[in-house]
Image 1 (cartoon, rainbow, N blue to C red):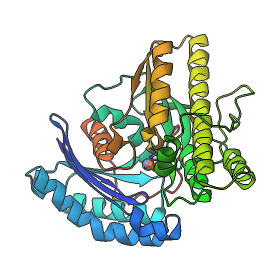
Image 2 (image 1 turned 30 degrees about the horizontal axis):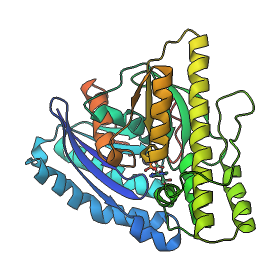
Image 3 (image 1 turned 135 degrees about the vertical axis):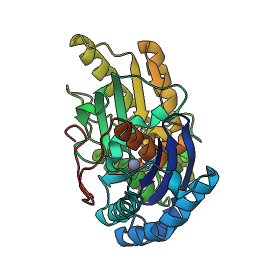
Amino acid sequence: MRILGIESSCDETGVALYDTTKGLLSHALFSQISIHAPYGGVIPEIASRDHVRKLIPLVQTTLQQAELNIADIDGIAYTAGPGLVGALLVGASFARSLAWSRNIPCIGVHHLEAHLLAPMLEDEKPAFPFLALLVSGGHTMLLLAKAFGKYECLGETLDDAAGEAFDKTAKLLGMPYPGGPHLSKLAEKAPETIYHFPRPMTDRPGLDFSFSGLKTFALNTWQKSAQNEQAKIDIACAFQTAVVDTLCLKIKRALKQLTEQNINIQQLVISGGVSANKALREKLALVATAQNIALFFPRLEFCTDNGAMIAYLGSEYLRRGMSDENLDIIARSRWPLANK
Ligand code: KG4
Ligand code: ZN
């Protein structure tokens, strides 16, 4: 079965073809970052209009790369939410119309479930049950993935997501949007830092997160500093270390909690845009070794938004015979993952 996957939830148009026997056949992505950068963030209307322009050329590219034509597609999956409604509607309307015209099944999938299962696109795949840390621009969640489609939220952010905190802190240090990768690069220049940032919500029980205070801490530190390049590097490093330490501490806490409940977890999955962060990957590798569990990441290009994860997730639903029953075009700005 060959599935066309379409991602258009935010500022990336992603398209991919996934074959249930051969795996990923092709994928193509257009990032709108340079279009939104002058505004310092994503402008929803501009995002929607650009998805309209890029979707068909990207579908043609993926078909050409895989040496297939439209008649070779057996099903279509699109991101139905959560995300920007206008942007989602572009992908949803296109997917629905194409599926209807070809008389093939179509399914609207959950963007975060797609991130969560993105490591399944790799040769070394995790197996259920596993503990997952989903860290993206809009979400930070610790999940117990019990089985396909069965996810329990163990903890989540009460305010800013990890990626959002990276982007906001980078912005106040004068870096372009999205600042996460820039801040992370800058932090690498400092082997250690003179500053110590708090590890939010680690001094009390529980698995929730709160990252908004860190950007205020960064702002205050910047205002009291010499406000030069070295201060930026030191703040970037202190901020990143605090986020990474906090995430790792909560993962260890979650593993302990699950063991106490007699739930045996042998595998840890990290996904979403912030899972591309080098310092996080390195520290988590140490945690996994110390805890004697296997660690799984998506490859770097599939940490951030892409069509491959949508095509893969759609293929899992469609091969189980699950597809959207009517012709509704689904676009949900908010959509909890745990009770999808
Ligand atoms: O998963 P994603 O592409 O979009 C959402 O679904 O939100 O994640 C994008 C987020 C942005 O906040 C971006 O700054 C962050 O992931 N990000 C990073 C890195 N690469 C991307 N944050 C820290 N370090 C990175 N290397
Ligand atoms: Zn995403």
